[in-house]
Image (cartoon, helix red, strand yellow):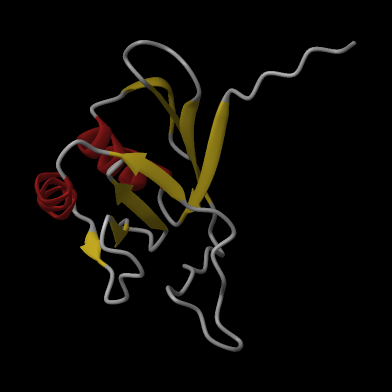
Length: 123
């Protein structure tokens, strides 16, 4: 059987370099690939990475979406030990806390390109 290995999730953005720099600050990951319109970050211990691709026609998703809004196609779930501290760190890195928060043990943020991501704790 042919082997499959997921190497990265890719987020589109108006500027791959800018969005990659945000996630570098947020996650503390390092660049494995660095081109003007493509960046791949990897975790220090190895594993699946996160890539960023410049898309000139990028339209950010709306959270939560309504009729006719650009819907998110995926989001990142990031487990943290301290939700309040992690949320403050995300905002300091350049994220925006979303107005709509569906759960007490999850904080939805928007990255600089408008992608929702969730910080969560395991109760």
